[in-house]
Image (cartoon, rainbow, N blue to C red; front, side, top):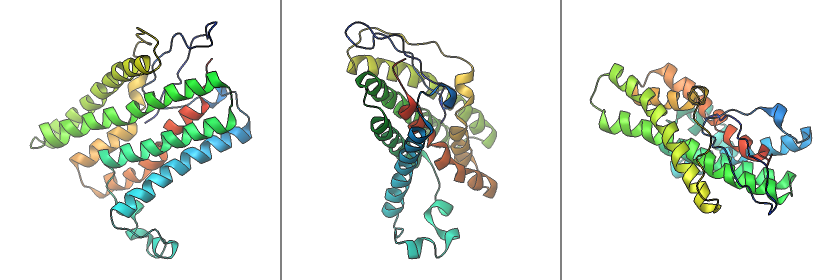
Length: 238
């Protein structure tokens, strides 16, 4: 789930963010990051560790051993190789990525305004991860469960679009409430905001088909879910 970089307007005299723009896609422009290569590496490491920690918890809950000797004994039967990444798994990995990215951002940046921006971005990214995939799961796996594959494919794409729009509205309002910033409509949606939720499309495909190629592509979902953490870690107040 990749996001367009979030731009924050200037900080007012009270050092508070007086206006923000909502982010609800996925994708990071590293050229805009003010951090050094070492700092970027730290953010990448903590975001990745967050995803890996979530995978470990999911594997443990599913009954898989976390002992290295057993984990690598038969890779083809490991959790990563066999698990179906659906809504629950995506949200768990996304949460790990967000927390990891926030931790990395705090490590490399002590500026209170930048940390505030990272906390706001954490809330936005949690919505970016969870709301679209929940909308997709609701439409395909519940409401239109007995429809044809073609119909469910259309419903899946519609679910991504609806989820992105809902994420923008809900998380904007939640952020404004939490940070006590009053009414703020955020930025308007763009067509490009919808193009980056390819992991949601992959998961939607899994709900529709159990084909081997769909399962194989699904192995890329954990890597895609590192991106929200990078968005958070690199977020600054200007």
